[in-house]
Length: 278
Ligand SMILES: O=C(CO)[C@@H](O)[C@H](O)COP(=O)(O)O
Image 1 (cartoon, rainbow, N blue to C red):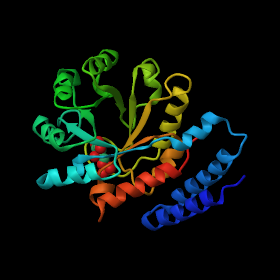
Image 2 (image 1 turned 90 degrees about the vertical axis):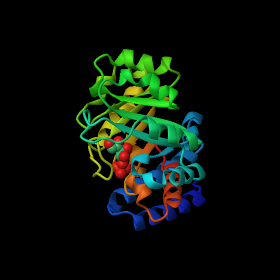
Image 3 (image 1 turned 45 degrees about the horizontal axis):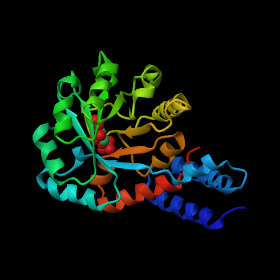
C-alpha cells in the first residue's frame, strides 16, 4: 500500500530543500528517488531488515573549526541544545595540511562544555605520538589519515587500546580499496569531500562514487561502519549523500554561517531521516 502521508512529507521536504539550495536539481532527483524507495519499502514484500533502515539514525557532526572562537562556549551550548549528534573536532598541524587549527587547550575547553560525542579528526603527521593524549583529553572517536600512517593497523589498534572508536580518513585522491585489509577493524571511515585544511571549500563530486564503493566493500564484512563525509556538505547535497550510502555528516560553514545554526542542524537532520538509502 502506498502511504500518502509519507509521499506528501517528502514532497514538502523537497520543496523546502529547493528553496535553500543552489544546485536544487541534484536535490530534487535524490528526493524523488527517496520517495519511490520509501513507498516500496512500506510494501509488505520488503524484508524486515530493509524496513529497519528507515529507523537508522544519521549523524550530524558540526565542525567546530567554523565556530566563533571568541564565543566558543556559546557555540558549544548551541550544539548541545541542537539535534546534532557529535562535535567534530579538526586538529591540523601545518605539516600534513597547509593550516594550523588548534591543540589541547581548545580540546580541553570543548570537553569541559560539550555534552555529546567528541569526534576528533587528526590531520597531523605521526598521529601515534598523540593518540593517548587525545584520548585523555576526552576524544570518544579518533580518526587518523590513511596518508599519514605507515603502520595503519598498529595505529588503529593504538586508538582502540586507548578506549576510543577508531576511524581512518581518506583524502580525495585516495581510493577506498586501500582499506580492504583493515575494513573489519574500523568503526568509521571518513571520506574527505574537499582537500583537507580549510572550511568553506567546494564539494568534490567523485565523493559519491567513493561512498558507493565503500558501501559495497562493507557488505557482509562490517555493516555497522560509520561512513562519514566531510567538506562542502549542506542542504544542497545531503540527501544525495544519504542515497549513496553515507550515514554521518560533518558540516562547518553550512551550519555556522547560517542565520540560524540550530535550525540548519534540524533541517539537515530531517532531510537525512526522510531520504532513504538502500
Ligand atoms: O576537515 C575539514 C577541513 O579540512 C572539515 O571538517 C571542514 O571544517 C568542513 O567545513 P565545511 O566544508 O563544512 O565548511
